[in-house]
Image (cartoon, rainbow, N blue to C red):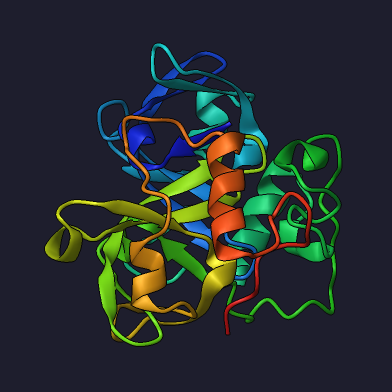
Length: 256
């Protein structure tokens, strides 16, 4: 099912033996446009660490009614995980240490969205694959959802609005759409833009460049936050743009 990332903010996170905290952010990679980690604030329960990363590989189930994620990990296992400084970029070296600690293969060690498959549970029963010759200094291109929210969106000919939210698949954890707030231009209309329609992103200037004219986006099917993004709406959206749908085609275009 497709869900709003903003709607998941402050969800509780439960280990097998109790609470560990609440979600305060997400990190995604800008190659596959997939959520790789939840940032969980643990200050309510532990003096240190105050923030931990949780991979979707650890998800057991989500209770959407009570707004909680249940993990397949114990509290102590999470507490003892590698420390992370979120004031600095998350390195591939850190990710390698993290995956090795949990004995999961790295999602980057094969070509699919989650390494050997399209879903994070494909990695649950597999062990860490040591690759001595792997370059742990490579930039994994992990970006904070909180940071990217608010970036300006530009069409091929003019400004469109700013990033208001993200729509994510709650099974693959792939980001399917950016929600664009156009309220400064078109009286509060929100529209959806797929990652594969993005030409480039300037991380230094906080700008997203979409390869569509502003007027085309303006006349696209409106999305209302109180309504779910269902397949019927998606078909209308892709038919309008005349673009191949993600469920019929390959992964989103990598960002350089």
